[in-house]
Image (cartoon, rainbow, N blue to C red):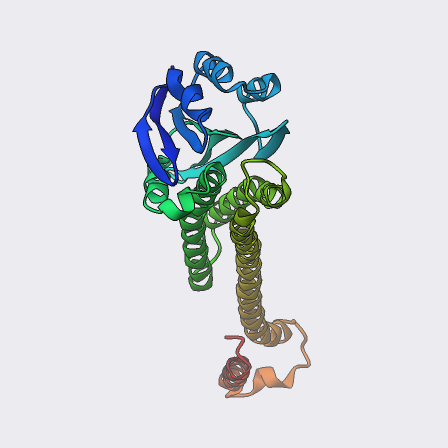
Length: 324
């Protein structure tokens, strides 16, 4: 069962009085007045009551009773129904989205929040502190709610950016581990989910700029355009951060290939050094009678000297070329 967070009537940019749900239609029908109602986890009973109060379209009510997967904007006559999502990231790093539904029409704005996201009391306080803009009425409240939802994405985007920079530094300092790959993949997955919820907001802002509704003033269109600009910046940052995640994996793979190549060169160098005494020992291990070196008094020491000189020469050469 949901509850009413706040409900008030406004006129000429100022709050007139707090109201109950039963009084909503009375104040909304007064000239120059509008009501702003905020609900938290409303059930079907509250929504049906609001439908009767403000003559909400039955399709809008049916849509509100469902759960959605992406932001959307639907128009029903001279009223609109808007679905938005606020991102929430838990301490464990799990990303979830809280749905908010907005009903707006002549004389009313109703917000219904489903879940624990940032409360919209901050929006109400901001609007009430700017009476000259609040005097525009329902369209300014709609803009303020939409802008607040967009603002909730910015701190989250900044945290992802910082985390990706940390991952890049870790990849440069040490070999790419399975934990690093899983972390980067988790970040890429979250960024894809964020894009899924942010991208539709561009189209929504464009539609709000062109809607010809009685309660949407033409002077408010630049404000919706400003929101669209912020949405486009978020999308650009998302693209950049996805590229950062992809580059982190690519850099890790390149560095790992380089480390493996260095290791292989070292193995090859030592194999070549060990092959020289093995070859010499193999020659003198052949059981031929006509081998004059076998009868030399200092032949054994001479062969050891040749082996030592050859190994030292090979080692010095490989060190010079960076193989050891």
